[in-house]
Each structure stands twice: as C-alpha cells, then as structure tokens.
Image (cartoon, helix red, strand yellow):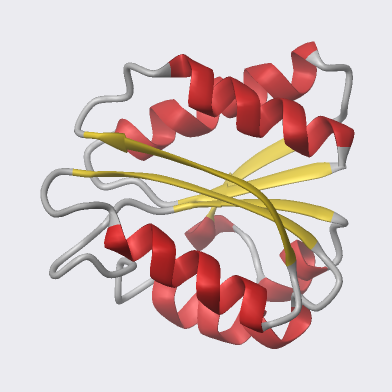
Length: 137
C-alpha cells in the first residue's frame, strides 16, 4: 500500500498528488491519497511506502502550521521506510526539496525519489516516475 500525504495551498501540489496516484494505480499498486490535516502521524507511519507532498513556502520551507509539525513528529518513525517527496515552488531554486530530502535521509528513510515543479505542474514525467518508483518499492 502506497500512502500519498500532501498539503496544497493553490492546488498545484494537489494536482501533482493526483498525477502520482494515477501512476501508482497504472503500475498496479494499491494507493491511498490523503491531506496532512485529514490523517495522523501513526496512520502514515504504519505504511511501508510513503509519498509526502508540500510546496515551498516562505524562504523555501515546508508549510509551517500543518506540514512542518506533522513532519517533525513523523521523522523518528521513518527509519527503514521508503519515502518519496514532491511539491511545487514559485521562486528560488528548489532548495526546500534538498533540505527536506536530507532531513528524511538523516532519519534513516530510503528516499525513492522526488518530483518538483516550478509553478503549475506541467511535467507529468516526474510525477509518473515517482508514482512508478513507489509502486515498485
């Protein structure tokens, strides 16, 4: 079971989650997609393959009221888990994704892939590749 958990402010990251979910299904794996605010850390941590989605906010950071506290609580439970990360950004270089990936790896997770888009999701290839990687993980 692949768990996709995301937060979306403008709809871009939600659109990415939908593309990734379609790719996981097309590859033949079971998938569940849920917003951060509609699930719990324990529910997410119970999954073997976890895909987390959040756009860059502020100075290239995770959304600070919902995603960052959730992720900070999830971190100690990620050791040995297969994790993918995705999100969109509107400025900068995508540094938030590099930092997020490093934090995830430092927690002992195996990062199976990332997908980032600048502004509106228009590169379905990255989302499809992440979905396929999750289905095969």
